[in-house]
Length: 127
Image (cartoon, rainbow, N blue to C red; front, side, top):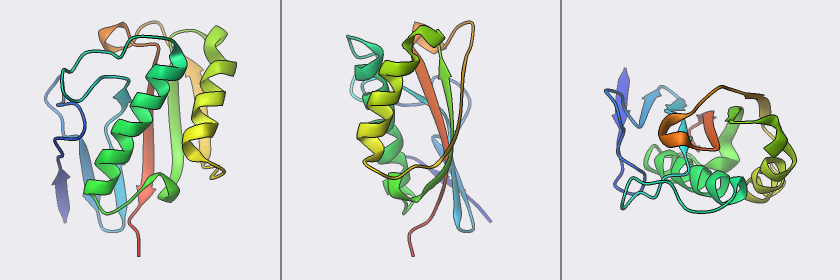
């Protein structure tokens, strides 16, 4: 059975999609950019600030679904340029605090709202 997940603690979707879908023991959140949940606008600053906010947004969605960043098994990370790869890695590592999920990371031509990064995850529900 599919369950649609929604929380006020993450930005509202900017298109016709859910913040996340929960299926059995898995949670599939939509990708998140570094947008402030209150305003829907990108946070000011570097890729580190945007990556941190994107992961805070994902954390809020995962919590609403009964999961957390500790339960993430796979991430896909989209960067506006690979020149930001090292800075992105630093922010990513700080937010996951020792948990190292599988990851794919690559550059794309453009992201929503001209974001510097977007992060997508797959997680399991806490038991």
